[in-house]
Image (tube, rainbow, N blue to C red; front, top):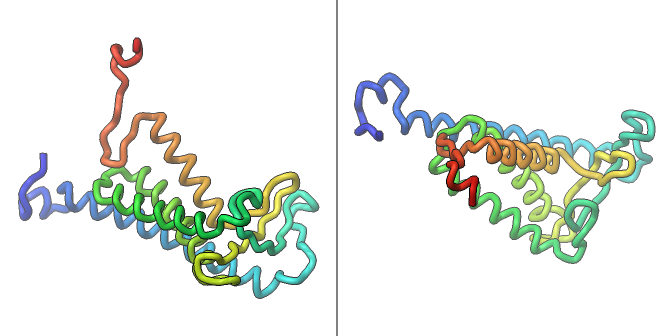
Length: 187
């Protein structure tokens, strides 16, 4: 299936190595966009909103307010900041390892969202107060009767949902599909 380097199909830009590089490029562009949008939004809300009253975006249903979160979603695990830092670093490593065999565009998008979101929150854990590996994540989108979150969290959730949907569809990051045989269904 793999053609040697320099074959006509690769020269035309359609070889497996070229396709994989393009998919990794998509992953990195999506990750960079998610990361930069998250970082920019956090810098903006900290500079403009921290210490001020919440701003209503949709009445009391959606507001913008700065919260420093040492834990995970819903404020759980406040004393486990270092653990969440290590988990984010591990997620980044796993995504990079998967990317080495990436040929699927939808998987590139999903992994890019996960990677960008993980980097966004990891940046907070590494560089925000109270210190390295213990930094508090800046959350600022408050939905009534729900957790306060940020755009990195949104990217992670969207990427995670896409991964689940792709997995249920039988799609693999390498572009292949897994179809359950009749024997596997009966077991």
